[in-house]
Length: 194
Length: 115
Image (cartoon, rainbow over all chains, first blue to last red):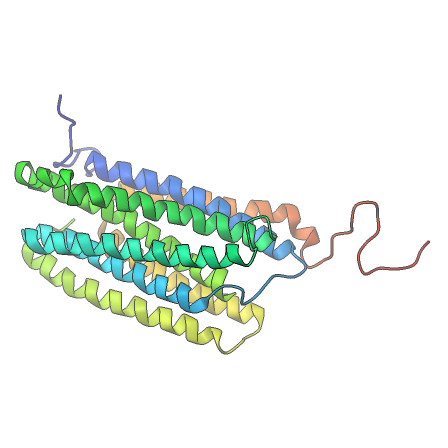
């Protein structure tokens, strides 16, 4: 049995089922991160003092540049599919995957530096919320990489069978990826700069 | 979603420009941090820039500038929920913001006398 409305839009919503589904999923993600941002505000405003300058701003800024660049390559991966340029699509999708990997490698070195100095999540309220927020965000990066790897590998076969459905899947992956970028855009200033 | 190739080609230029703008704003955020403003100004500057960057990602990369009403409906509900998440818990702690919380047993830190 075929899943309906994967390519054509539903008459009642004007959307494909996949697009409505990914937006509802992103709505739940906003709630998840919103709860943690709210927790951060309460912890920060309630704390008599808050550490400043403990994080490596340069590394955080580099990771911001990496994620923004990956958002551009992701949207280009979708746009090149719409232009029927398969080779460029592959290039942009692989570039996004690699950039995501570089982000996680940077994060690994950052975490390692903290752990070497004994700054574990149990060290202070700041490190607890820092590791919770960035750890959850890192898991989202990893999840995005798994999806991208699928579309670079076995999932790419769909392009020959149903190009429109494949383009939609890349668009939904992109929506998720831009959301992950958007979360980092707020995480960077509140954790590294303020 | 516009799938016409001419429209997509136009969008590609926009994506590149937005990408550059996001990188410039990131640079401004880091540069502004070097000025060591007071906390209220620093928070305002950082969050205003982050909001501008977030708006660009959402409206251009996520195509929210031209989406269907069902997507906007879902997002309006999300924004309402998000605002509740951000404000309601703060009401419960507002009476302690900026004040030292006394240690258990009544020995408030930094306060002496009375015994």
